[in-house]
Length: 291
Image (cartoon, rainbow, N blue to C red):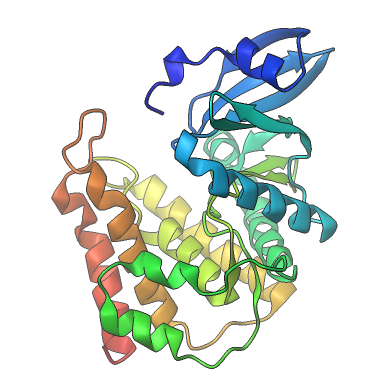
């Protein structure tokens, strides 16, 4: 996160009324917020600091996590929230375990149990009613200039509105043993059709570029296996979703929009050709949807 090194976690904690933190260690991996692991009275917490313009994002994340927790989803607990120099800040409980992606790289033999648990947990999120007041169609606009695709989504008959995570992937899901111990990073949370969240996760598992050289045989097999097990676990817990072509096309368009600004930028390996599989995915599902 730009400017992260200039932030003083102890000053931020002081603004939240905490002056006795023993240690604040920066955590890599957050692209939208700065994150530290904080040791506070022998208890680990996570300090999450947003950009100035993300006050609405922070507030939505808090509301989404509260709704998820009330629905039995393992999420970080909000200990403190406040503002430091116009930047929203949260002190959260630390979620034990490893990211699902990290665990599977270290112990691929756990893919069966963890893949199914991964899917079942997302189905459980979709069983949670969205908080009152959360917009129900904002996610459609993430498809950018796909005018016909967005119009078709807006005109779909309403089926069910649920809490959507919309960044549900193996780096945001923590696991311990064969269980999901926490779902992180609710900054994208929205209300809407669960099929959108399902499609976004599927596109991430299947076509998001993970390395400049593409998947090797082992990685490709692992991604396909995890995607199959995730889907199996989801259907087992939440039932089968139908009429998915529009949503898969939307997810592909969203991924192109998300990743395109990184092409050729310092610190990113992404080049235009790395998005070709994503474009093919988007266009395949647009054709199947009659677009």
